[in-house]
Length: 459
Image 1 (cartoon, rainbow, N blue to C red):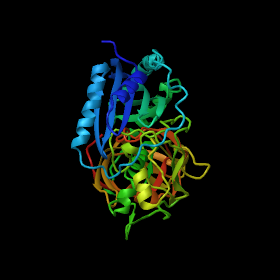
Image 2: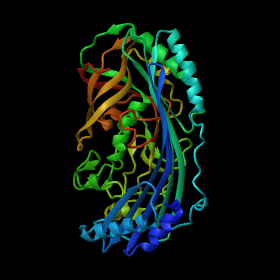
Image 3: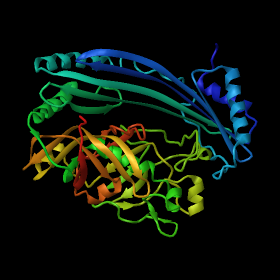
Image 4: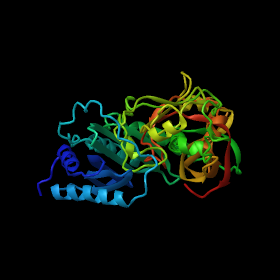
């Protein structure tokens, strides 16, 4: 089958459209992965990812159809016809409005999709071979997973938008066991794996395995905890993805205030934290335009192609902005602040590394990551979950042993209100909810009275 390229696919779909407005999105990319267990590579592969999505508007009603895999001309027309048929049967869309006026087309719109370098994981394979040998010398085995994805997103609209974003990202998770304690875990994020050091990650794991050799039993309770960047990312991902302005104004979220108002302007963090997004942030680049195949409280299909820029959600500990669609911004009379697909949490300059915060701890717990996180109450932002892969007791500035894992119950907003110290902001990935916002940079937080409500058998 002679399949059109992404740009031609968009033009064919828009030509076939008969609705009042049409959005066509094509995502094209390659995912590569490695998996290893017991210090042996057990799987490797790659997969082409290609997806066509058509959003049609007919009489203020919306229909959408998505097709995975490369398609020919007939399938493109079928997708358009299907989206329009769905739209005719849908209820009126409350957020309906004309598509954004197009700006300049992306300068590289007509360029072919560039395949990722074929050897993007080759250097990692060599490092792992050396790492497996090192682990064997120390009576350890390594388990883990690495993946790298490159993705080009094309967006065309009947209003004339022709936009494109090329991006890539990768991450690695590495676990070590030595048979003398629980397994230990660490991770890294990267654009291309040239900046990942397996030896450096093993240094961290060796240190944690030494901590595991002394076990300490502690009862459930409220402890001062050092919450690492990946765990802070899990909590902040939830705080961000539930920050829709419309829901807040309706009194349904932790950002609500009585009388149909929101908490804009209120102090929500105990230290001067700034939470922001920026599509051009180095190492965290994301699409500088909005892409939506379906409407939600945080985005609208009618905003497809809307230009995105730097946005400050919190500034110096105060709530400055909530996530708006054009519909909610107009309805509430607020500045338009659309969802951006990255997130950065920062404290005052001079935040220290993990070792610095540990050294300043009289008595507390150093966490590794959070897992199995579930929403308890949207209105208070209450979450529950478990710690995973290591909880360590710190006394007088030194780690003195390993503690069993706990169940926790806390809210991201309650957590940052109690925080007393913030470390250096570093790129990371949420361990559990990493797919919610993939491009993040977070610091370690010192949080007194972190509620660890029950001991668990999880490792």
